[in-house]
Length: 423
Image (cartoon, rainbow, N blue to C red):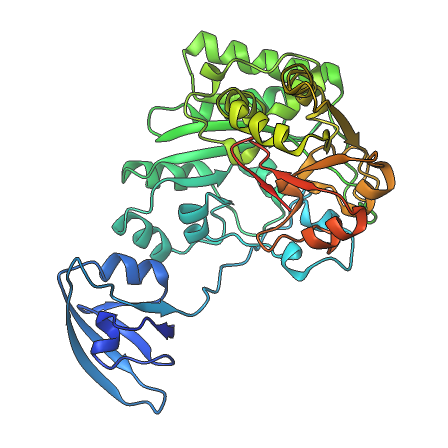
């Protein structure tokens, strides 16, 4: 499908050539233009021979000479992502309660989203032409949901129909220089123990261009009626996974293998020092978030305390169960150094998703307001990841709704303590 132009920026190169919203950009310099990545990749040449089609079907050829001072100015219509064709036994979206925002039920498995946003993809829906494009356009790195390298087990876990060898596909990408960040979601009695070790051995093969491997325990909600029966790891099992991973790292001098924060918390084992995470390649996977939060707090605390003193109010820091113990020392330091602004931490049990869900990013405001009772003259600090990009919670409350409900100062803190915003 050719790229449909949604808008043209005023005074841009495209505007000067008479290109209009609604036109279709068929090709640039003989290359088909299908989406925003094609536009960026082929539209960066100095001279662009563009073939366009207007709304009435008229085609024309337009030459555009690029320069550094003026934008090309073509805004494409929203990209239509590739949907997931798998039926994973552990799919979190299948465990979502009904009647939430439609966007929460989207199952994308798109290699462009992997390249641009770091979304994990299974590779099962890629065609030969997709691999050719990835290699030609150097769409690297990609983020791969591996889970297991055993073809039979992976097929059973991920519920796809065709026979599929993920190692073969990863070798193909690696040979072309595409960097791969890998994810293993571990499920008790499925891909753990010997299968886990087998997968790790496969992934560290020098023929694979693997840059990181993240180990994450399966996440289960209370909405699993009519789904495959699964369980979570015990504390003892989580500790064993960490031990296995650490032994593997040390014996083979592999530094790019990481366990998630959730595993350390579950096992009651201290979070590693920041050197463990190197440059945090899997931070979006919950790997290294707590360590980075503590490091950012050290850098940001002076400015944070300065703002807090101006308010001259107490601070209530709301979080999920998993991060509460790590916010306590921050609250204690605020109390000690801000003097007039004591801080306390309150963790919220996730009744909506189920009590096994302990991360703050999956809290609803209904759960928060039912358990959190701010005291008079107290600021409520909420983790920023309970909101989407539009500032809305899972259950549809805006930041202004929350401020109106509590009638107090609201502070939204980035979960990595990198920034904050007063509401």
